[in-house]
Image (tube, rainbow, N blue to C red; front, side, top):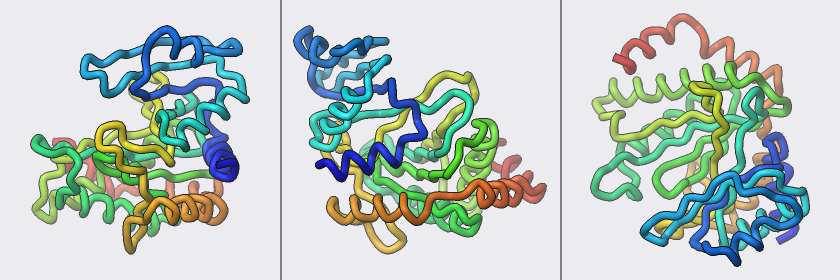
Length: 261
C-alpha cells in the first residue's frame, strides 16, 4: 500500500491537504470520534436517508491523519475528495457525467464520442489528459508542474468542453445527455472538491479504472499507468501557455455561440 499512498500524495500535492470531503457508509458518534482526531474539525456532515452514502467535510487535518484517510481510500473503506485552491492550482479536470434518465452507469454513445473527442483535442494541444472512469462517466485530468491562476485554467477547460459539445452537435448527437462540470470552478469562488483516483464508485462499487486510447485498464494496470502518467505526462508551464494561446484563438468563438444558444 505504501507505494500507492506515496503516488497519491505526490500526484495531488498541489491541492490543499488540510481538508477533505469523505464519502462513506459509516456514521454515528463513534465514527466521528475516530474521524476527528488530533485537532481535525467537522465543517459539515450530510447523512442520506438511503443509508448508502454519507459525506463529511473535514478541515484542519494534520498530515499523518491525511495519510490514514488516503490509506482508507486505497483500501476502498471510504472515498477521499480533495478541494481545489480558490486562487490557483496545478491541475484541472473536466468531469463528464451520464445524464441518462434510465441507467446513469452505462456508456452511452454520446459519452463515448465525447471522451474520445476531448482526449484527442487535448493531445493536439500538447496536454495529454489522464482519464478516469468515474462510475457515471469520466474525469479528464491534466496535471501541471506549477500552479496556474484559476481564471486561466477555467477558460481553458471551458473552451475544450464547448468544442467537445460542438463536435457532438455537428455529428448529430445530443450533448445535453452529458453533464459537463469544470474544476476548478470560478463562478462563485467557493471551494469545490473531486474524488481522487484509486476509489470505488459508491453505488456500483466499480473501481476508478483508467481509460487509455486503446482500452479500459484493469486495476493493477491502472495504478501503473497512473504512476507513468505522473512521471512522464505532467505539463510544463510553457506548454500550457502555448496550449492556452491556441485554444483562445478567435475561431473558437463560433463554437461557444453554437453550444450556448
